[in-house]
Amino acid sequence: MAYEIAVIPGDGIGNGIVEAVEPLLIQAGKAKDVELDTTWFDWGSERYMQQGEMMPSDGLDTLEKYDAILLGAVGHPDVPDHVTLRGLRLPITKGFQQDVCIRPTRLYEGVESPLKNQSAGDIDFRVYRQNTEGEYADVGGREHQGTSNEVAVQSAVFTKKATERIVRPAFEAASNREGHLTNVTKSNAQAYGMVFWDDVVEEVSQEYPDVTVERLLVDAASMDFVRRPNEFDVIVASNLFGDILTDIGGAISGSLGLAPSTNINPTGEYPSMFEPVHGSAFDIMGEGIANPIATILSSAMMMDHLGEEDLAEVLRETVETQLADPDAPKTPDIGGQATTVDVVNDIESRIID
Ligand code: NAI
Ligand code: MG
Image (cartoon, rainbow, N blue to C red; front, top):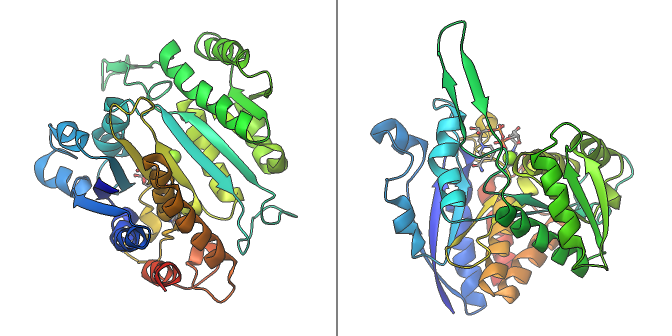
């Protein structure tokens, strides 16, 4: 099959990673009879600094005709973070109703967790993060700016449709895995949105009698991600909580540079977007040493979504063997000295040869 893929490398380490990974995907696709036709978009902070917009105003119309989108990262030291995020990633996830953000966390062989006594496979869970509303709804405002009467209001929005759209696939995933779903909220302090969320979880749970539901408040869940990560299977959480928990997931499984993510439009009406969990990493940008594996694994999730499971499996298995090989090049975040390009070349040669 042939697919049209929109590629948005974005900012910072997103650029170098996506430039290295795109040819690998095309070659790996060829080996599996999958044709990937890519179109590059130079949208991001450089464009914002020159033209005042992260992407053109008709950006979504342009993207709509693609089968999927690969995003590197956004964020630039000279542009406020709320401008970069609200100018590119959020309009796409919201505009294309990409409600389902799936973020697997796994400790791979050959990678060391900062936690004691964790071996490969001990940590293996998936966070289902609501991706279009909740705490990231663009609802609020500031009044009397610059005066001592200044006031800021930021509201969270929870709708039945979008909540069900994340809760149901989370149950589905739990049902296909170990039958254990952890619902993370903060219902003690947020008695409207979060209690509503709990009600939706309770309602949908009736359809999945084989799944046991554990309820955790987000502060306790953060602690338990560190204290007992092995006990988690599938976690469902709001936009903000899912965002925070998956950075912890990245850290405990050795590096944020290994953590992939999806932004799926569940109806298929719009393209879905795939990107690593991490951002543009100001501290290492331009050094060429960012770990490309999160982006490769995100691309594998794209292939799963497009129905190209064989190609997805090849990418995942090759990453797994590459990480397990003590002689293979590794980037500094996981204890090596190699560059992004070294790692991608090594993975490519394992797939193509
Ligand atoms: P970050 O995720 O970019 O970096 C956090 C830490 O993880 C840094 O120490 C970084 O060096 C390390 N790291 C991240 N990815 C890595 C990789 N592939 N290889 C090796 N090390 C890696 O988060 P930070 O620093 O808070 O944000 C930087 C910028 O990225 C900000 O502008 C932020 O708004 C933006 N951001 C964008 C996201 C997106 O585009 N989806 C997601 C998260 C942050
Ligand atoms: Mg994040």
